[in-house]
Length: 68
Picture 1 (cartoon, rainbow, N blue to C red):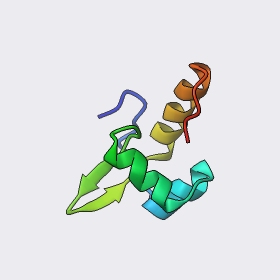
Picture 2 (cartoon, rainbow, N blue to C red):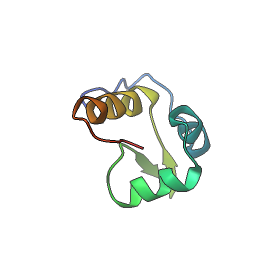
Picture 3 (tube, one colour):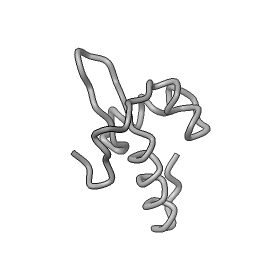
Picture 4 (cartoon, one colour):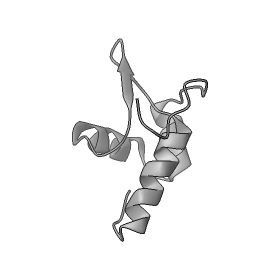
């Protein structure tokens, strides 16, 4: 579990994660395959938490990197 995770927070879909980050679904899948983005996989289905995506994005921006 991520330190930014809230176990009560609902999961969002790949499509919702892409919309939240302002990228294409393919970009989400690429980042997942490279292990660059926080995700969960249950029964082969990808799920995300907005708080973890926001923290991931903030960390990369803070480091001066382009997150997405």
